[in-house]
Image 1 (cartoon, chains in turn cyan, orange):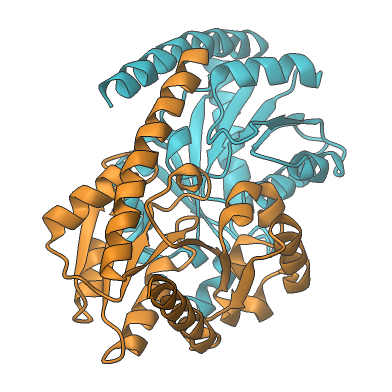
Image 2: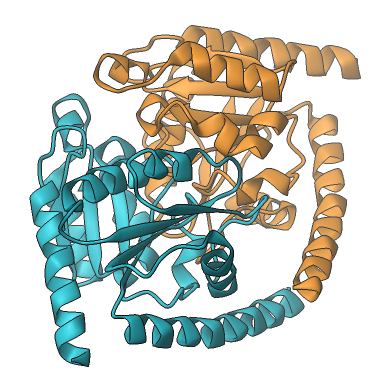
Length: 223
Length: 223
């Protein structure tokens, strides 16, 4: 067990180096990088579909998709005319910075305004791996229940933005939205919370504004 | 990376030994052991609440709850008068057989007809860890989307039973039930599929019958 911990610590240290290189590269290109993390089925790809569709003609986007298996998610993004590359982990439970480097090299993605990295569907393991992103986003669907932030505290504490998804299901599920917001605020007092329904469009404009503001702030800071 | 794989292989080998000891112990006591695996929020605890409530007076049950944080799930089971013990992994993304041994020793759970082990909410990492169970059950809520079996193939191939949960939400979500069943059958031709709504009660009796049959078969086999 001690050996497992040591090896994991070494893997994380190696990851930090690659993440720093990525962060430096994204600073030079002025690309805003967003790392999306959630359980399987919280609606990461559906939010990205709504996002790239809405930003078309305004900001250039690309997507790195992380999955255990299938090219399905990259195909969904490419169908909208947006460059996407699928990273297949073949069983791996999270993305690491080296996979992002390789994915960027192999995927032939162009330099863009916003690069979205959709992590492997997993609310635990991706939390500790820095991918050189500007910020992490955690998604939680209202169908997953209102007890999740305190049960998976690490990601809700670290993600600068929490997106509550599938709000169109609120009438049909037991989900106390105010309780969830209180849990998130207690774990991350500086965090932002957006409530969305990607299918109905609710809250998507607020999410887009947040992306626009972050991109502007990043470029101003580096300007 | 190679070292990580070696250490993981060693950890899995050690796990196999503890799992074999547990399996032998459960054979002696004639306890049916069920390992429930799913994403966070697929409804594992809610299915267990419906299960132990329905079996009360007929079969004795106990529950080992695995979570990253909080005693919430064990509290929910104990509130129904059923013995439960919470295993807190403190960040760990799955249960292992040694944690089950320790949990049984520390939890003071009585010998029962059916022991349920609710794994940490994670559709990937728990898949490869044998806990000495009779069979694994994978749960998938209809709100998680109908593309999940092929995207997370390992657990759907290994779990003898797949429970599709929250069927009461079917009218409100895009979820092709037949497509999901086909994916599961292609990954696991021998597997059983049960469609349930723990809140409405649909399919729960079929799930209970499956448990009764497995318990009877186990005891007959061990004569």
